[in-house]
Image (tube, rainbow, N blue to C red; front, side):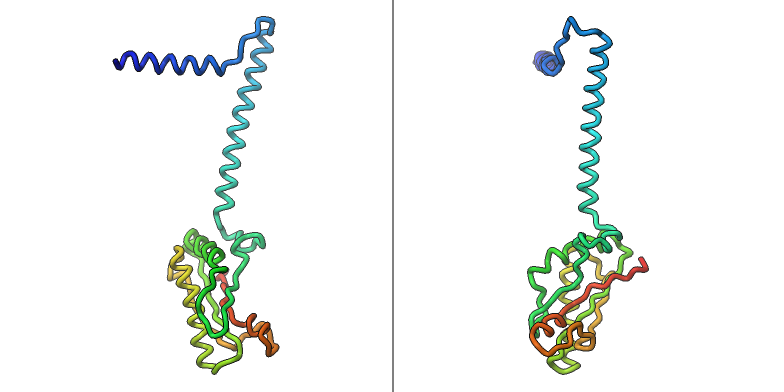
Length: 187
Protein backbone atom coordinates (compact mmCIF):
# COMPACT_ATOMS: atom_id res chain seq x y z
CA UNK A 1 0.00 0.00 0.00
CA UNK A 2 2.81 2.44 0.90
CA UNK A 3 4.37 1.62 -2.45
CA UNK A 4 1.20 2.77 -4.27
CA UNK A 5 0.99 5.98 -2.22
CA UNK A 6 4.63 6.78 -2.87
CA UNK A 7 4.25 6.27 -6.64
CA UNK A 8 1.03 8.27 -6.61
CA UNK A 9 2.83 11.17 -4.91
CA UNK A 10 5.66 10.98 -7.44
CA UNK A 11 3.17 11.00 -10.29
CA UNK A 12 1.40 13.99 -8.77
CA UNK A 13 4.66 15.97 -8.45
CA UNK A 14 5.75 15.08 -11.98
CA UNK A 15 2.34 16.02 -13.33
CA UNK A 16 2.40 19.34 -11.49
CA UNK A 17 5.85 20.14 -12.82
CA UNK A 18 4.81 19.21 -16.33
CA UNK A 19 1.78 21.47 -16.08
CA UNK A 20 3.98 24.39 -15.01
CA UNK A 21 6.59 23.86 -17.70
CA UNK A 22 6.54 26.01 -20.77
CA UNK A 23 5.84 24.06 -23.94
CA UNK A 24 8.92 23.57 -26.06
CA UNK A 25 8.55 25.36 -29.31
CA UNK A 26 10.28 23.44 -32.03
CA UNK A 27 10.91 26.55 -34.05
CA UNK A 28 12.63 28.26 -31.09
CA UNK A 29 16.39 28.54 -31.24
CA UNK A 30 18.07 26.74 -28.28
CA UNK A 31 19.98 29.94 -27.44
CA UNK A 32 16.71 31.93 -27.38
CA UNK A 33 15.08 29.27 -25.18
CA UNK A 34 18.02 29.37 -22.81
CA UNK A 35 17.86 33.18 -22.66
CA UNK A 36 14.08 33.09 -22.08
CA UNK A 37 14.45 30.52 -19.29
CA UNK A 38 17.25 32.56 -17.69
CA UNK A 39 15.06 35.67 -17.83
CA UNK A 40 12.15 33.79 -16.25
CA UNK A 41 14.40 32.47 -13.50
CA UNK A 42 15.76 35.98 -12.84
CA UNK A 43 12.21 37.35 -12.71
CA UNK A 44 11.27 34.71 -10.13
CA UNK A 45 14.36 35.54 -8.05
CA UNK A 46 13.60 39.27 -8.23
CA UNK A 47 10.02 38.59 -7.09
CA UNK A 48 11.39 36.63 -4.13
CA UNK A 49 13.83 39.45 -3.28
CA UNK A 50 11.01 42.00 -3.50
CA UNK A 51 8.85 39.91 -1.17
CA UNK A 52 11.76 39.74 1.30
CA UNK A 53 12.24 43.54 1.10
CA UNK A 54 8.54 44.11 1.75
CA UNK A 55 8.62 41.74 4.73
CA UNK A 56 11.64 43.59 6.16
CA UNK A 57 9.94 46.95 5.61
CA UNK A 58 6.85 45.75 7.45
CA UNK A 59 9.04 44.55 10.30
CA UNK A 60 10.87 47.90 10.34
CA UNK A 61 7.53 49.73 10.51
CA UNK A 62 6.62 47.69 13.59
CA UNK A 63 9.98 48.23 15.29
CA UNK A 64 10.27 51.35 17.39
CA UNK A 65 13.92 52.28 17.73
CA UNK A 66 15.63 55.42 19.03
CA UNK A 67 15.18 57.17 15.66
CA UNK A 68 11.41 56.83 16.11
CA UNK A 69 11.62 59.22 19.09
CA UNK A 70 12.57 62.04 16.70
CA UNK A 71 10.26 61.04 13.85
CA UNK A 72 7.15 63.29 13.83
CA UNK A 73 5.21 60.54 12.02
CA UNK A 74 6.01 57.95 14.71
CA UNK A 75 3.44 57.05 17.35
CA UNK A 76 6.17 58.04 19.83
CA UNK A 77 5.89 61.68 18.74
CA UNK A 78 2.80 62.09 20.93
CA UNK A 79 3.96 62.57 24.52
CA UNK A 80 1.11 64.31 26.31
CA UNK A 81 -1.77 62.75 28.21
CA UNK A 82 -4.54 65.15 29.24
CA UNK A 83 -6.92 64.67 32.16
CA UNK A 84 -10.37 65.85 33.17
CA UNK A 85 -10.73 68.29 36.05
CA UNK A 86 -9.77 66.74 39.39
CA UNK A 87 -9.36 63.28 37.79
CA UNK A 88 -6.45 60.88 37.43
CA UNK A 89 -7.94 58.23 35.11
CA UNK A 90 -6.19 57.78 31.77
CA UNK A 91 -8.70 58.31 28.98
CA UNK A 92 -9.22 55.60 26.37
CA UNK A 93 -8.05 57.93 23.59
CA UNK A 94 -4.46 57.69 24.94
CA UNK A 95 -4.25 53.89 25.14
CA UNK A 96 -2.79 53.27 21.65
CA UNK A 97 -0.18 56.00 22.14
CA UNK A 98 0.83 54.61 25.54
CA UNK A 99 0.97 51.07 24.10
CA UNK A 100 3.48 52.32 21.50
CA UNK A 101 5.62 53.90 24.24
CA UNK A 102 5.44 50.70 26.29
CA UNK A 103 6.51 48.69 23.23
CA UNK A 104 9.44 51.06 22.71
CA UNK A 105 10.50 50.74 26.36
CA UNK A 106 10.20 46.96 26.24
CA UNK A 107 12.30 46.78 23.06
CA UNK A 108 14.89 49.22 24.46
CA UNK A 109 15.73 48.18 28.03
CA UNK A 110 18.27 51.00 28.36
CA UNK A 111 15.65 53.68 27.67
CA UNK A 112 14.47 55.81 30.59
CA UNK A 113 11.23 57.77 30.76
CA UNK A 114 10.20 60.50 33.18
CA UNK A 115 6.47 61.08 33.65
CA UNK A 116 5.88 64.67 34.71
CA UNK A 117 2.46 65.21 36.30
CA UNK A 118 0.82 68.64 36.11
CA UNK A 119 -2.42 70.24 37.26
CA UNK A 120 -4.25 73.49 36.72
CA UNK A 121 -4.03 76.22 39.35
CA UNK A 122 -7.24 75.37 41.17
CA UNK A 123 -6.75 73.61 44.49
CA UNK A 124 -4.09 73.93 47.14
CA UNK A 125 -0.42 73.47 46.32
CA UNK A 126 -0.27 70.23 48.35
CA UNK A 127 -3.42 68.82 46.77
CA UNK A 128 -2.15 69.60 43.27
CA UNK A 129 1.23 67.98 43.96
CA UNK A 130 -0.63 64.82 45.02
CA UNK A 131 -2.94 64.95 41.99
CA UNK A 132 0.02 65.37 39.62
CA UNK A 133 1.65 62.32 41.27
CA UNK A 134 -1.53 60.25 40.91
CA UNK A 135 -1.78 61.19 37.24
CA UNK A 136 1.83 60.18 36.62
CA UNK A 137 1.29 56.88 38.45
CA UNK A 138 -1.84 56.20 36.37
CA UNK A 139 0.18 56.60 33.16
CA UNK A 140 2.94 54.42 34.65
CA UNK A 141 0.41 51.63 35.34
CA UNK A 142 -0.78 51.68 31.72
CA UNK A 143 2.82 51.49 30.49
CA UNK A 144 3.63 48.65 32.91
CA UNK A 145 0.54 46.69 31.89
CA UNK A 146 1.70 46.95 28.27
CA UNK A 147 5.21 45.61 28.86
CA UNK A 148 7.34 48.54 30.08
CA UNK A 149 9.64 47.73 32.97
CA UNK A 150 8.93 49.66 36.16
CA UNK A 151 12.63 50.48 36.64
CA UNK A 152 12.64 52.40 33.33
CA UNK A 153 10.04 54.88 34.53
CA UNK A 154 10.29 57.75 37.00
CA UNK A 155 7.28 59.79 38.13
CA UNK A 156 7.58 63.38 39.29
CA UNK A 157 4.82 65.85 40.11
CA UNK A 158 5.06 69.56 39.47
CA UNK A 159 1.46 70.19 40.50
CA UNK A 160 0.46 73.67 39.35
CA UNK A 161 4.03 75.01 39.23
CA UNK A 162 4.75 74.62 35.49
CA UNK A 163 1.71 75.72 33.47
CA UNK A 164 1.85 75.88 29.69
CA UNK A 165 -1.17 78.21 29.49
CA UNK A 166 -1.52 81.20 31.84
CA UNK A 167 -5.05 82.42 31.27
CA UNK A 168 -7.71 81.72 33.86
CA UNK A 169 -10.29 79.92 31.75
CA UNK A 170 -11.27 76.34 30.97
CA UNK A 171 -9.18 76.12 27.77
CA UNK A 172 -6.02 77.12 29.64
CA UNK A 173 -6.78 74.89 32.61
CA UNK A 174 -7.41 71.92 30.28
CA UNK A 175 -3.95 72.39 28.71
CA UNK A 176 -2.34 72.37 32.14
CA UNK A 177 -3.98 69.12 33.34
CA UNK A 178 -1.47 66.75 31.78
CA UNK A 179 1.30 64.21 32.10
CA UNK A 180 4.31 64.78 29.88
CA UNK A 181 6.40 61.81 28.73
CA UNK A 182 10.05 62.92 28.73
CA UNK A 183 12.77 60.52 27.53
CA UNK A 184 16.24 60.65 29.03
CA UNK A 185 18.50 61.05 25.97
CA UNK A 186 21.55 59.47 27.67
CA UNK A 187 20.61 55.93 26.52
